[in-house]
Image 1 (tube, rainbow, N blue to C red):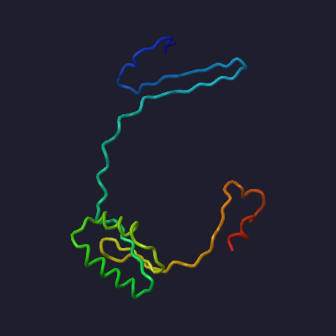
Image 2: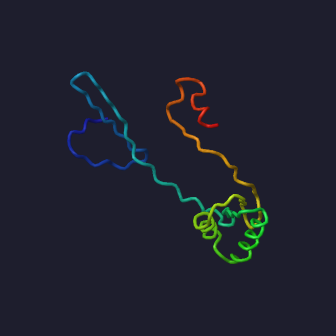
Image 3: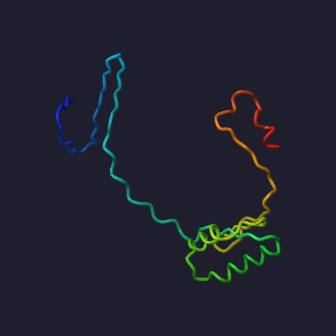
Length: 137
């Protein structure tokens, strides 16, 4: 350990490089922080298989959803799965009847409920029990 008073190189060693920085205020306030050199980044993870990209489709009715699913599956043969998934999620309308295809297989299907608006006042729930319950109804 040494007191550094001028700019100095931080030598590379076989263990993590650490430094302590202290500050002593006039009014008695003291602060200390320990700095450590960032470790070498690990090798990147292998890419996620693109066959597992969810494709979200929607329609106004159950019959329309079946037709939309068949149309999507027939028209995207050979397309990049991630591009299809993005196009379906971003460039299409989100209608009431919805389905999720994963690898060309329907894994979820349902109808979006007609829920109302709910206001959440973050950080303001501890005053009394259930204070926001009336807004959620």
